[in-house]
Length: 218
Image (cartoon, rainbow, N blue to C red; front, side, top):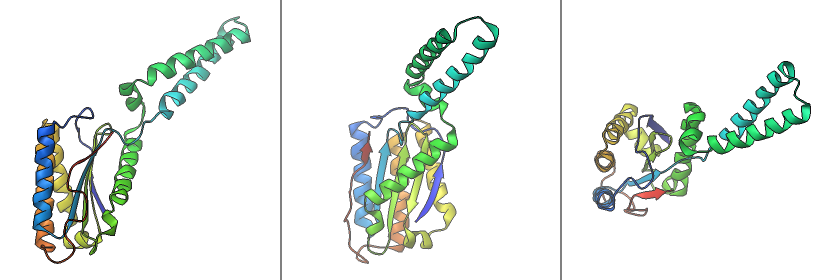
């Protein structure tokens, strides 16, 4: 299995693909499935992790730091300092749990690691690793992390140059960045389908054994 990915802006919220556009994407997947014995699965998720640890961690650190100036610069009793700490921790935890702030607290590297892990998980969950001939390809987008990735199984990876996958992701994310989400998915699906059809035409293995529609995860 190989990975090619890009970290460019993706759509801002779940449910960003209208029903009509989802039908267009589904048609593109079906067209590809009819032209190759390979398998293409497209998955989009609103987020790859809730990152609930972030507001708790930051609130705890700030509450601990606040205690030091209160101890050394005031005559406030220790009991009151403790109460202030608890109040600050509770208030900050609630505030920082707001979705935009919560994501902003998490380093990009961690978000991309979690998104990549979700992509690998979906590669396995969607049974792309079980295709005869090892010709499964996953097209994956995680909205909150602004992350897109293509995972290809070993047979198609051997047949296609590594930089080809990156160029497909670059074209897809460029479309998504401009608000043409469905067009980005369709272009990636069609380009991947042409690669699969070239190396794995219909009749060279079991056809159409996996999901033929866009999978939307909340």
